[in-house]
Image (tube, rainbow, N blue to C red; front, side, top):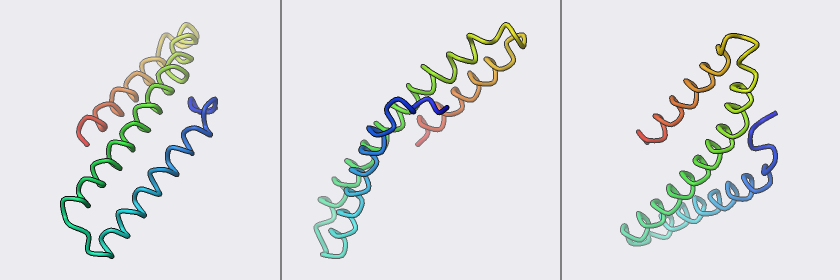
Length: 97
């Protein structure tokens, strides 16, 4: 089960709003909207996607990583170590973007 399963509808709703924002940006470019106004909207869409990513990361830590840590006694912590490394890599990707 995905960590976001409990709030899947909220995640999808946020992504649909971002999708609408991106369509709006495309429309702005088609209509030759002033560059700074387009950039402002790109920044807003980027922040919205980052908020979705942080929410998904929070869900991953709270569900997937927690589950791996809780069951780590069964495999000497290998699953927990793998999930923690996976989360750390995801955080690094988010920080770089």
